[in-house]
Length: 533
Image 1 (spheres, rainbow, N blue to C red):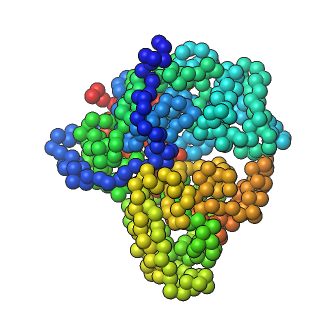
Image 2 (image 1 turned 45 degrees about the horizontal axis):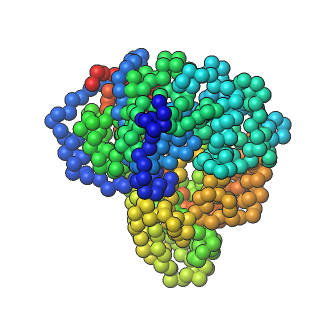
């Protein structure tokens, strides 16, 4: 098959590609009336959840909001939620984060640093084959990383690999990653889903990986079909004959597709509607604790937030428990203005910050705002709960004399040219450990430094932690760095929302997952169908 006739070719010429965040975000306006009507349908047929050994066969239809004409099967440039779902099932990286957010071997058996943390040796899992039957070799690994870091066409994972000098092939199943600076946590980089190993002659028009499913057809923005990889290296898996991923333009359409049985599972349902959806006896809910966060972002280099007392005051006006209850319907954990809650160096001993209106007023007065202040908060439906969080914050802040004017824009505008320049706004992040998150958002060189954070003492600690091989010492450095952000950072991190998904009761094999990715981290290799539809 040549590329001109490939079913994996993209639909041409449909306008500029939206940004990563524009696609990851989705509208949350819901047709609650339609939903309630469907929940009360007399056509509902209640089924028992399947039990026992997994059954083989069947097709799983998965609905996800977002995506569009820019959808891709490129393993190294996943943009939208639907892209990520496809990539996880087509390709596999050397390591991965499991459902408990533990870093585990995948195509690698091990990844071990030398004493300097400049050379990491990776042993490959023997016997793994690509979809076309060829064995995975060290040469393919080297070629994969050359593709990702190609200076003429860098892929999304390239920024995190800036310290990578060379991937040297030692033998068929051994490679060395040689770094230009020590990195004690380089294995975390190897566990990113956007670093799937592909053949040295990879062509995205003929997507070949090692994943549990093989691509069958692809209509960007509409529908992707995959079939079981019978040569998959894990015993018995996958159980499904077919996996179909369907794009929906909004949550409304996606929810109603589930309730009318047009799809078998959907990802990322609004937490405010969780109880309503769960009331349908045909539907099961997958409610996962995560380390995701939905912060308010204060630019520390612009007034009024260039005064640390103002930043501290804004943090003190937040009633975090009320946020959890009103925005997440109780489905989340309290935040303490720190990210990476699953990191072993997480500063859990810091006092839980609580609302203190009196102290907030004092701080504002000391900063020159004895009568309070006016501030614009830019919000958009970038993630379920974002707009609602802005509204609750505005109400809570009134008590301290902070008069919040909410400016709601659409998601495309929010993540457009002005993104990263808003003085006071919001954002969202999935689960990451501390150092990878810092690389993304808390360094002057980070691609998404929303708060314009640039603290010399913090930088010194992060640099030391990144090169510290001793885990205990590294965690101590990370804890100190977090203490600085806790005292003078630009984020208000009020909570960590759960990830909630929904599926028909006859679907089995989906388990809670802490990564923040929907539907068991999109690992459909474990899913199976308990009845004949």
